[in-house]
Image (tube, rainbow, N blue to C red):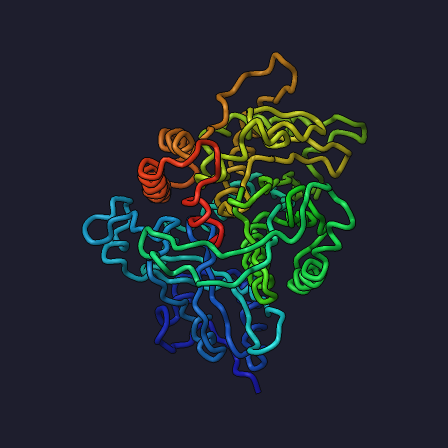
Length: 500
């Protein structure tokens, strides 16, 4: 007989005894989900307990299923390290004296408590150990939400929508690269804190540059088709797998989802695509522009609309005719435009990502504007009655999904609250241009009071320190090596190609 789950269990060893019950962290839906999970754990060997770090990378611990029974009650202790390291694992936040971000528990890199969200529990496909995946929410040891939690930021934004009887709806459209692994050394030579070793040795799987050509997809179908089945088995609402322009560049799109589910799906998607491809001798990367011959840049287009929770109606809809959007929808778009520059860091967070926001990539946005059915602008509006929505084309595929979505949804809601209708005509207000580098984006982010409002001062300060460290390491390398201008650098390829 499976052991029953109780929110008042007293086992210790991980987290804090009865942490979930003591602080009332779950609603009835999550309590019911935890009870179902406890009844199924006898059929599971291992559980991977996961959270999303500030960079958008999944961090995890794997525990036996029997230990996870205790984790469900108590939460699980995690090191604060992922909040302290930049993308190259250099220590960017001082944890020996005063971390300087307003979170005292970071001193000494002490543990925080990760509480699994039972609604994200998912059995992973595959042979071998029967393994499940569950994502969690970060808490300080006194039971308060962790101020550095990206998932917590999105939760706060969604609460603001709920107060207005609204709910955002999000569709994912993600480009990424499939390459073939060539073997060779594991990349540890020269590696260390703030020094990334060599990226995986790979080769292209096809020549590319025949957009949507069936034969190009056929050349990757031995990986892409079983991958599609895997994604669907994970409950992800897959719509398309298609071959993009670059050699082995794929685009994966999904049906609309509730915003938190979409962010959770993006984290699961990236992690499982990389896992699946590596198990078959291939490497998947969500880096924007790898340092490989003839590769094109990849983007992440975020489709978004807002539904009324009272009527289920799409508040962007304005009739069935072409080129129409409601005043509320147009105001939402205005919000995206008005905050595009200062929030850009949250959608394009790497040195490499700004290579895409350049004139040579004609379908990547370079200015803050919008239009109906136009892929050359930042916000493309697709109209058609109940399906009317905005597509923000600014993001890079490796961005933190919780921060990216939170930033755009927050900006859109602010626009709706202000009620200023966006006008695509020439006389509409002109907004500052998009940043052209990580340094420029960091300056705009650092000076933004609206970024503080969105994230809270601790997370804004922490992100600033992380990005300052990443940028300083790149600048120091660039000054020492003096690479040819315009080319993707070896530093970028080492820094991002494998990790992302």
